[in-house]
Length: 80
Image 1 (cartoon, rainbow, N blue to C red):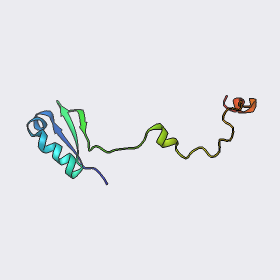
Image 2: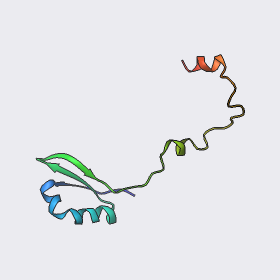
Image 3: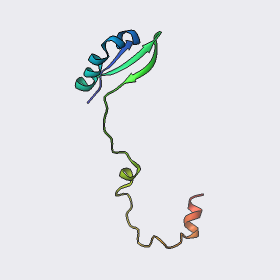
Image 4: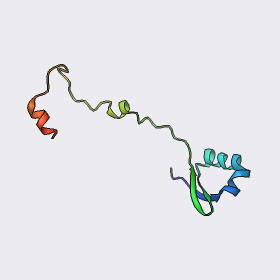
């Protein structure tokens, strides 16, 4: 899904903010808001991401047989 991006000034955005937010929600449009011709904000559709640290690591441990055993010196050297 590609997002369409439109550049508008703050003065255009302010009186029609609800209309623009509806477009963001329904049409997945992205708006770059400018002030004096310079970008100051970006309004984008919200997307729920499950990118928590635990979610990213889930399933990444292949085996963990003895978690309380000390780490070997070779393992510490490999980290240097």
